[in-house]
Image (cartoon, rainbow, N blue to C red):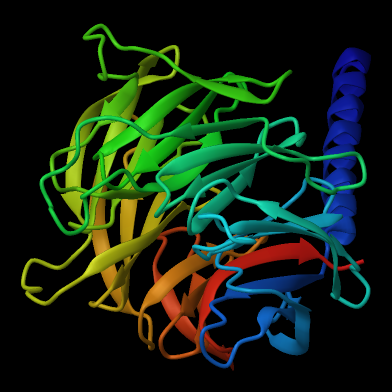
Length: 396
């Protein structure tokens, strides 16, 4: 072995050792325990947001009790520093006006308790979804019954200011006279570059695309080539009723869950964050004939699998994702062992999926086979009244 070969070998060996050391350090520094916050409806026994201690190694959940009392906290969002939690208050009356509320909390990561900082109007009835923009300086709100979207500034201490922008969704209504009688904003999220905000509207069969000024916190409509009320949007088949949306990690594909027909519509990103439909696929087995509405959609962190929940069939549908085309193949169905699986989430390790069954008052846990995406139920179920949203926060 020449001196040059020996030198190269030593360099390679040191590099491998360095990588292994770095991976070991990452594994050691990864959180082993998390707080699982559970948003609920408070029309029954629930009092607000509940907390559980989650062991990432075993998947076991330990009840920490009521984290904060608040009305109908049906959707939750946590800031990037895990210091503040924001909850919609899904109601139709806020201090005498036709609006719901949004409540800001500080998080005590030692006790899991939430301390209310303030509460502001959501600027539309029945807010059902919130998310933070990419800067963390604004909270984006979708108001279902109000059919509006709002931008709320996040102040330095985590409190919320009054809305800097409120827009009603507009466009041609879908054909279902009972469900699509007006616009129904159901999901809202800023794009990766924070230049646009996407809104799925169940009433309009569209994912609306608003221009977002991240300096002033304002939204504005962009007209498509058709002009008039044909605003910039991704169009779905009539009667789809878009609910929630998931994106591939590279932004090349958008997956839109149809609540009313339990489908996933796949859109390909041509350029400049404009999308064209390339596939529509059902999340139900071919022989299913009962009533059903879809609720949640999520992509596994490895980007290979997509999951949706069905209320009525009370199942989780698993799809495999073609990494080149972005198209889906239905790979299986699994019972949620409960009623009305409104929401589910994949844990921070990517090893488990947890489902919130609203009408059977339980959270059910599954192990994920990371090579196939298959789910298998594990015995870590817990009881909680009317669970409808699940979010993880690293424990301090």
